[in-house]
Image (cartoon, rainbow over all chains, first blue to last red; front, side, top):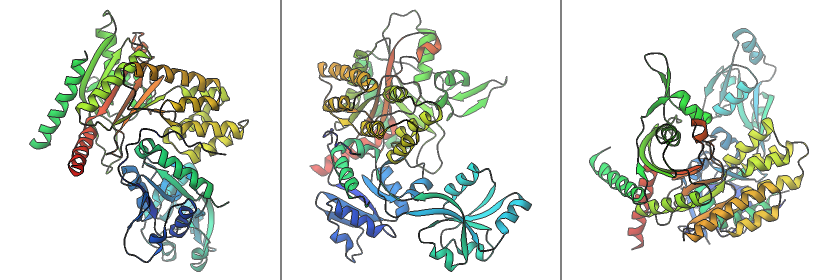
Length: 226
Length: 320
């Protein structure tokens, strides 16, 4: 399907369009798709320690993926790219979700130790499971929707560690290849949802910089890996 | 709030009220505490976010979450015999539940007007003109007003035969502007063609000058035809008043409040990433209070206007 590039709008914009670019796992493919959409990303690819890169007509601002919704909601960045997992975890941040970019595909899963029955046993004997996760809201929603009670244990770092040394019966985490789970003797018990990278926009920028946002949206749409 | 901020806010308040009064809008006040039943009658969904408590005789009370519903009640009970149109304005606190630690305030001040008894398109054009004057008075010459239609998607979905749960979740996706989710929801509905799905998504992206109305018509359908006709009329009424320049027609606009019908408004300023205010027509609201009159109004979030004012004046200094 095609998108029409809507009119020039009434934009009286300040300076170049600011795009929030996620560092980390999505960084490489984000720069690739921006390249394909005609944005010059060569500077951002260097090993510079800077966080902000000026290119023609656009400013790339690099940050943690989980900070993208914060910057975009506040309008500090006009548009941005981040994972659907981040958007779901921060669903109270009001940003416009314009495109599924298709890359960075991974699954949010419930995992437990291989051959270990503590998830089922806790559920049976305590009426609730203890779940360690970096995604408390996604986990909470999933168990609420499936009618089970859990004790949420929020951790910041390697969540695989938790069930191995007795913090929790299982984990809710993002899995790309499954290698980390494998190496830590964990296995997928339930699939919760699938995540990919998304293109998002600030509400006001979407209105006042309509032409620029639509132009970039159309170019990104054309550049989505099939 | 400390003296310096208070002085600035007071100046802003005065400037806004002066604009409203100059155009014949008389200031009114209503109590912050209302019977819950009154607020829910106006808008059940907005009332859900209200703070509620009991009085000494066990009646359920609520803090108002906007001024439109209390003024509808006031107009219906106190001005029932008065020759319309009624022009009222207010500057008052309202209260809404928030997510903590998000910089949102439970109590916020709204400045706005209600024009009761003047129908579309002229009544709509009048309040937009007042809104523009208010923005100028606040020093927000660059602010833009988005103009959309609250009935467009309700009618479009009816035309497509989408009812019930699917309808609610599609409207929610449209309101949140979650286009990925919108496409997924639409294509999950049986009997909806790829073309209809594409029309709905493309429609929500149309925003700009009057040329977008022609683009919308190309997408076809009688719901689109009716909505664009309403928007066209309003836009022409604005042009006749010389007030169309800062209005952006936006077919993707949807407001959260349930009582809107026909034209809806949102206010943006390039200096701020948040919406400054909004409004629209609510032709069916007063009937719920026993007075069947068309009405329209808008409210500006005073704190946000203040922030935008500061950013704009800072920018003004930098440009010089």
